[in-house]
Length: 402
Image (cartoon, rainbow, N blue to C red):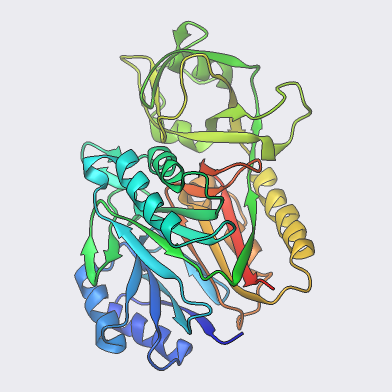
């Protein structure tokens, strides 16, 4: 294929030193596009200046990352930097950005989706990145479900292979920012639209299993679940998990459980791929409520309490990689992209093995591969339009299409 993609990873408290290391690894004259993932302890302006000092006015996308994942190393200290360099029209994506998330996530997504529709055909691969944090404190997220809902509506029937995720500066959801138009920006969403000659295969890694029967959401306000089966939601969840009401913070709950919605036949045998799980952002003992990462559940929805299982998480990675390898056998693979929920890092789960390390062992250091720790992951689900997911890893491999 007439084009080149290269990736690089470095970790250094000095942003310029990290970017210099990445530039040496890439060793590419005048790339057509850079995508950068920058650890949250780097000052954004300093990281931008470092990149521009070495790559000039090369167009730049990407933004903050709670951590960076590459075949040559990974971490979430906040000092990591990962770069992807594209050169050649056959491989370089078109970058489209909307800066209006603060005015309304659904509308911003719709406007961006309409722009993407105008320059794509069915089957195009699109990588979506957005600023996850609307404000803090108090913490308010830019809901991925509303962005993606609007984006899909803007596509007006166009069928794409849409993957992506929400950018964060750290695992604690402190803030987020994005590169756009040569600047560091807030409240923006970017679509990287890959050329028509590329296709992608994606696999989703899970790691939760149901620990309750089905529960009806009987009262909900946005992302705040107030009642399950006509009881305070927090009471129900803590009783079923054996936790004492009022002593568990939302963060602790999010480490052990999610609320999951089973797709398709509710009586089908357990299959992790049939569940959309929602992390618990916070708990309110006074209101007896749970606030989820996304406001896309509604009264009447049936959910289950899902236990986060480290063993299942690692097994899911092994199964998923094996499945993907079979699917892409013989393809001319060009780039691997990984969007990994920050909650899957071992510092959060207590797992002895980093699932990112388990994944990276499958990639040769010479193969262009880059990932980041995210707030929300976006992937094709159930053969329908893509949707946001929580506590998943989304691995996509791009390859040439003939």
